[in-house]
Amino acid sequence: PCPPTCQCYDTSKVFCSEERMREIPVGLPGNATQLFFVETALSSIRSGALGSSTTLTKLVFLNNDIQELEAGAFRGLPSLTELEVSGNPLPVVSPGLLMGLPSLSKLSLGANAIRSLQPGLFTAACRLQDLRLPGNKIEALPPSIFRPLRHLQTLDLSQNTLAELPAGLLAPLTALRLLKLSDNLLARSVPRGLLGPLKKISSVYLSGNPWRCDCDLCYLHSWILGNSEKV
Image (cartoon, rainbow, N blue to C red; front, side, top):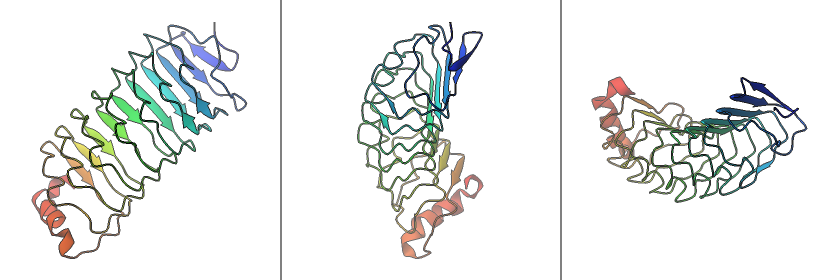
């Protein structure tokens, strides 16, 4: 069985794209492994709207009208490894959004309207390896926001409005390999030692920021000189 507003491929991949769709359709295949909602009129994802599934590994909401993700919206998906909610007018992410997703390794929240990240957002996402938040309106980050993410390898914060970064922000990210901070509003506030803990880092993107070349940037300048192959 496949809902009339969706297309089902081998019952394992389900693609739903209907500009009048305002609710998650009933009757989605119970054994689906990948589920896509693209260019629908979905404006909110309620807690429990997707039911429970032990087979779903990938869930994508792309270019919808989502303005709210309720806490527990994705609870009951223990096998989910990849979650993407991109291209929506979503202004905020509930701290309880990632509860009940023990297998989640990739989270993409790009091209939304997110202004801030709530403390504790990633507490339940300790297996996360890939976190992408480009193209939002994030102005500041809580100092301990990334503390649970000790396995994170990719962090993309490009194309936001970050003007400064708190000291110790990246300290827990000892496994990080790729860091994107390009196209923000970073001018001079790079805390001394910010990049020091990143022993495994291989690429850092810093372009497109209005850097002011004065003594406040001495730390960053010396780090770049010592790690020029990574920048």
